[in-house]
Image (cartoon, rainbow over all chains, first blue to last red; front, side):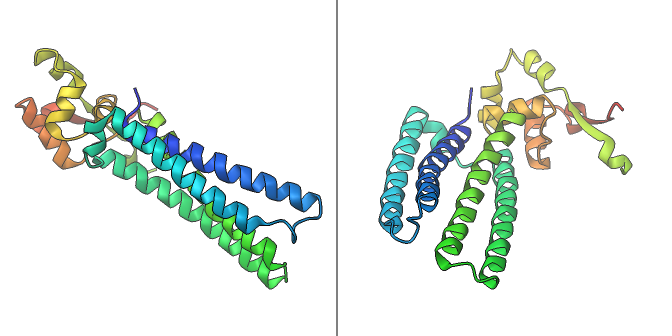
Length: 141
Length: 76
């Protein structure tokens, strides 16, 4: 049976991958259709961020209500170690993304692409963090 | 690889739980302040606990630390 924190990592992973996966899917289709500069991405992004907050908060609350005692307890040493390992992986992902965007800016890539590229790096880092947590929890379970 | 990297910490937690009235992993977890999953990971030697948790486990079973945990060279 999964611990509360493993369930929490699954919720965050699925919420991030689902919501921002949709955003980048819409983005890629707009770019393919030549509508990159006219599509209201800011509007979509704000709506998706609100949706993510609601979904994440709702699901985290749900799993906390199903295991209230576990949810109240602080993370134990193994759980903290897993969080640290996962955060280190996410750091590497975001650093690679940032370095790539720096190179893109230096090469004169339009800001629309660099801004979304940087956002993609942040999202991938978060997804990598939650996915790593799930893997560590599963592997050491 | 250094010699120390080939060492594994083995433990007698499963046997000790059995000898203490089939204490469950959840009961042991409650007594030392970790999750049941962490006790399971320790018991299966998938996670090496901190000294503090190791001492707490030994105290629950009223045994010296070295009779609960011990190093064994890994099989090659």
